Image (cartoon, rainbow, N blue to C red; front, top):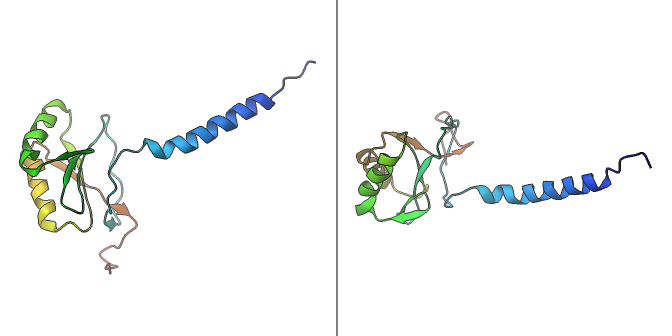
Length: 133
């Protein structure tokens, strides 16, 4: 028989496709937060993994996925800033968190050595021309 049998190759490719389709959503790391919606676009990516600080609806602050008490936030951020190349940090806050708490955490980020703060939102929300509900 001089022909190549491609059936096993196709079977293996389909199995790998299914594995990647199932595994891809599991690769995202984060804490579930109800982000506010805006019309802003995404920021350009850096070479190192971005630092993410999250404020949950109950007011708890997390650095990446580690819960951090507010009184220790500045010290931990200073230690992290000393080891990082960039001063970029992404701040994620639940839509139910009061503005004052978000500003307090932004002040702690600045005091901790992170002056380049990006606020994370969901894309597709109201613009200034189209007020929210």
